[in-house]
Image (cartoon, rainbow, N blue to C red):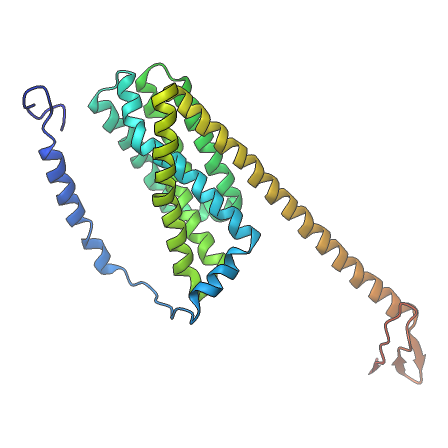
Length: 286
């Protein structure tokens, strides 16, 4: 529309674009009439329980994931178009590159639950961070602006499916009465706090060192935390396996002690004091 509308002097007329944006916003309200959300009674002491929830290491690491992903997303949203225009991209290319990514994301969003459950919510966070890493480094090395059309496809997992995973994680990790609070916290970190960081950090680097360096710095930050979070998930999984092995071994030892100390007296099984320091007095018929 910016290419086809008549320009006033040396500038472009953005009036048709804003009119269409208003119309589409009004039309998008219509589907909400069919939404039937489930309301849960909030907890009596939200502040105290929310603070206790934040002490959980898994939730703290999750909040950092949301913040890092939000900074990358905010930088792309604020400075991505300016960077492409510096490379010579037209308004048509800017719209097409993002439009293609959004259209391609629709089928993935439709089957998002299957994808995320198959991979795992926490594992998908690592994939989303690595998608941002690819996106940032690809843009930092890009010489031709039309390549952005392909690179924007990384946002399918970096943003679209990522936020579906965020909502699902909040439902799984938080108590019912704190799920809304958890989702609001995640949204605030991703879209508000992270945008401030993207504006300040990204603007400073772009102003002093250029867009390529800004994308490289963001890519390095995202890659560093992807490694940290991935290592955390691996350690968590290993510790879980150790606990399972220990529990299985304890059950095995208990079973062996019972079998070795079992005595039969007149059709009745009597288990005396065991050598494994566990006193079980059990009687039962065969």
